[in-house]
Length: 368
Image 1 (cartoon, rainbow, N blue to C red):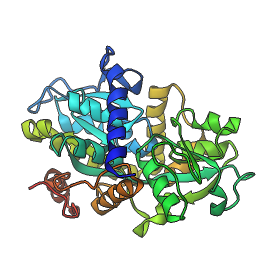
Image 2 (cartoon, rainbow, N blue to C red; image 1 turned 90 degrees about the horizontal axis):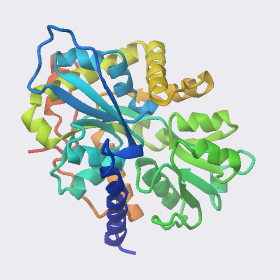
Image 3 (cartoon, one colour; image 1 turned 180 degrees about the vertical axis):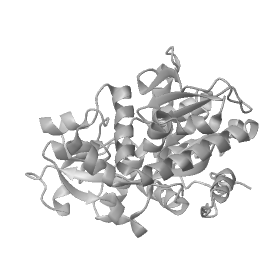
Image 4 (tube, rainbow, N blue to C red; image 1 turned 135 degrees about the vertical axis):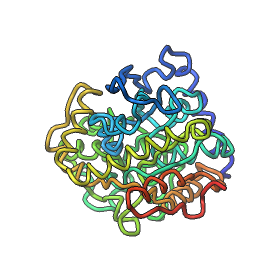
């Protein structure tokens, strides 16, 4: 099967999925939550070039820079009188749709939806402006059914969504094992079952899946249910680092409000610095933010191991994004993309330089 045909199918799925979302009052229905809340702003705070900035992120620990940055007011502090309006999403495609529609201006998101969003718009809708997190992805299995990596063959393994970052990584790992799976249907030597992270633990408990290749905290939730970590994805990457969360911005907003973008980046850099200097306080803050969003905090046996497996950093690890794109091409989910211009790291490097930190590289994929 050629790469073009699966890509067409993937685009069709994304468009069809987006239609009902666009008809809802909030704009994205069950795929997002607009909390309607704005962070407290000092009465005498000076506004930047925009009255507000609309940001999006997931209620996942891999998005803790946003969770903590909002929770602790670190992002708002840098924005002065420009207020934050936050929305949370369950999946990357819906966040990309929100960015395209102007419902958000800046978002924390995984590499695969960023790549897909950029290529589908012919490089006209977004730029990646920073990294945020690395790691935090594991293959967790039922130890009664799967005792070794070779035992994964013939089993039912969940990933969060067709074509999402973990789905692409798992399909690539399967291919490297020499096994065959049809990327679209998930059928083959391994049954790849696309399952929302929210229901994956229940699917595991019921026995309808034998394991899952998932991000935190879903991986640690499975371990708490008796699962075993068979593989940490970080072990497959040089220096055990790979991008799991980027920060993206709409090109329109970047052009019209560079001061706001720079302020958000200052807040992100300072948030990551605070997280790394205060890991226990930051973990507590992230959990409090998750409790506000979901109504339930994560128990210690879930959040503790999950938190330890994630690295928070400003470097977007651009070379690993390019590798992830190559994995998607190999899986038949993407035509070979032209990613030149996907990054604009000039604002981030300005912030890093001013803070006395080392600048970061775009691996030759920067905007002219």
